[in-house]
Length: 445
Ligand code: MV4
Image 1 (cartoon, rainbow, N blue to C red):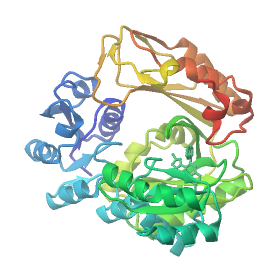
Image 2 (cartoon, protein in one colour):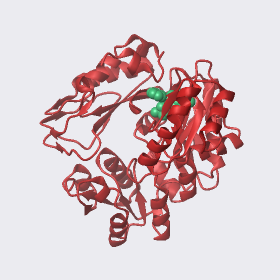
Image 3 (tube, rainbow, N blue to C red):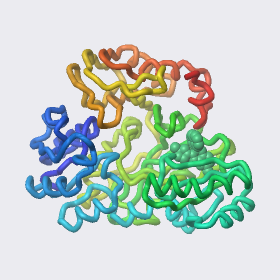
Image 4 (cartoon, rainbow, N blue to C red):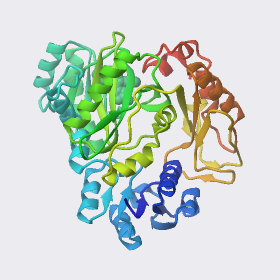
């Protein structure tokens, strides 16, 4: 097992990783930018090292300084958390070269899943269902036109280096495909420095359902009960739950087995997530694989009792898989609380938090590194807390979440709490009948 882990992240996830390390008896060193010097994470770690100025490019993305910090502090592993360097295959490679264990899968696995067209190709070869479309990057518009003709319009253009919805474009006919293709390439090139585009049949109203998996170096792979992540806005998830109200035991088993096949196809080790789109007829299709611990991992922890961050660390250290949990215990929901004004197009609301009184009681967990007197820096994302409710069934989990959101007192900044409370009153949400268009269709913003 590792003796000391360097945490290359900030905020609630840095704290979450510190907590896991403490329970495992591992020393921690957290890196930070100048503005984060006195954060709750730095105060809870055994050591902290400033690696640069406030912009992430100079600190949380500064590979040379982070590696130096690991070497100076004698850390034998680096946990990247989510975002920043978590899915950077180059960083994983540098860690390996320096003899520091990157807590995540191999650089090869990160690289194959980072190229979304290649990921599709691998999954198709392994018998994991993919959305009809191109198996490779399309260099010429004529090729795209040919594929689109075969699968039928509408189609969606996606950037192979993108993911999470960045650089997508829906086209209804050949004319708009011809018009949009080169500009989509240019946009992708600008955003990701790689212009590769692939196309898929556009599914009209899919649900986003994903499977947490865990895998050890011997090739044992488990799947966890699915997470329903359809409640998103501009490709940012806002509410996640486990299990999905749309998935029965039979579908869970079919999708879980496909998720295991996906992980095995790239010799995956540690924890990861296989994302699927699911249509009204229970057809499911591989969309992407995320090679990191995700923001929404707590809902899986609540319905299984597994500490996923500890499991991730144990698996990275070469230990064997803990027993799996296929059927969920009760129901869990997570609301991401952002410091944003939802009445002003979710504009970030940076500034001083004057009041911060947490909800609690039965079935409520709050993952946050924020406190009263904390000043939200303008440099990073706007998530300030995750409220996770757990109940014996979906009804109880919703009732507990509603109760907790009303208890939560935050002063000084606008938050998305009122927005979440509205969603939790929506009839379609309560019935569990929604898809990825829910916010656009149901919430008047
Ligand atoms: C799709 C899709 C429909 N068909 N792919 C990909 C990333 C995720 N955040 C959204 N993604 C989608 N991929 C196919 N083949 C629908 C979405 C999608 C979406 C697309 C455009 C505009 C808004 C959207 C909201 C949710 C899901």
